[in-house]
Image (cartoon, rainbow, N blue to C red; front, side):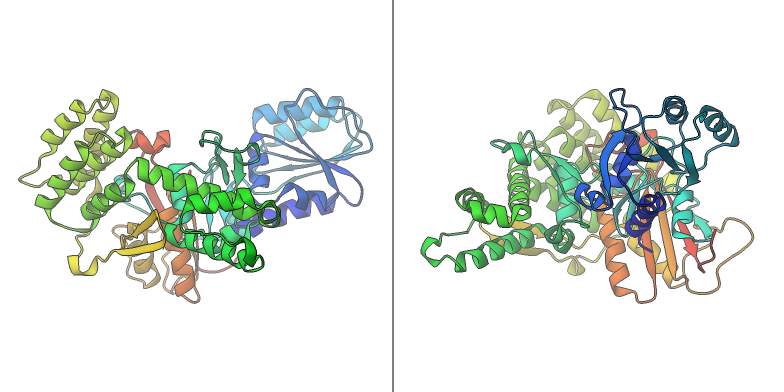
Length: 514
């Protein structure tokens, strides 16, 4: 089950069905994102697609020598744009593919508009999702039909289990994640595999926006689940290998600053390894933000709250951090939220005092209200189960990676709740009372293909869990999806009380076609 491959096969089939000749790919805003995360422009060019246009663009020229491949979501706006296009066609022939179901009435309207008979084909190709990684997808689309079209794309007929009680508040048990992909999304923001670096001090023009795609970036594919310190070490090793070829010009590579200077001083290296220079820039900015926001210390306290059961130590550490003027408002609110959920019923809770500390720190009333809201909507009364399982302190080990000076990366042992849920599912121990089946059927055999869909959004930490389970569980294939990929800055992640975050496990027991 490879969601990236499923989308790529759909797009390849669209292009191949149009036959030989020069083509234009006509898309909307959403399908542009769907295509761009799985194909580079150069790869599409090799398939005789020489032009990329938006269906809503008003300034397109007539090009009758081109065939038009239309990949669109069947929204009212897109159908109307397509009707206008067919009434005054700019291309010789049209192959139309919708990313999900289109109504018969809309098909009729398109047929009536095709007075010049330029439409050669109309089909539904169910690629209505963003394939972030081979095992991770996000809807990230307005009005998407949940995971239904993923099942069609993968040709799976599922047995469905759903979470009886919402567990949306578990989001706050996750700290800043120290794997590369997760850190990039948390601190810089990944939007359809693109990062906006325009605000980075001293950034060059060619690096103001960069793409991180495991499909087209070998270094990223090999390192996205490694720890921050290991990324720096791997970049350092690559540069040292290059230096061995130039012994006269050898220079020290002990810090990220040294690396950035190296890239600037060796244009031939930059040309040979443009991808690596991109990662040097990204890692450098991550390092700056970690230091500026003191995230090493923040993460350590978050992990203590998530994994240990020492209230005295926890309340002292949270209070100490709140009194630190360098702690950001977002980090402060997240710490208090996590404390409120972790020690919700503790007899010595200092939550009122921490709320006063937030007020003195100048945290806005809107953000302060979130603390009580997340307890009200995601507390123990609503969950009906423990949010965080207390862990023996002996089992909680911290590993320190010192690949370079200035990058001392803490990697903690916290695992998301999804790990335990999937482990129980695979072993046949997942309780029907917590995850009932939809309908009268139930699964007797061990599931082979599992699709997990999280309403409200998934995280890259959960994607790492799925990646590791796929590696260590032979005979089991797992795909994770959600309505979005969260980080703290996402407005719908920040205002958790506005929407539930529910878990839906879809156990695919065979490969029947839908």
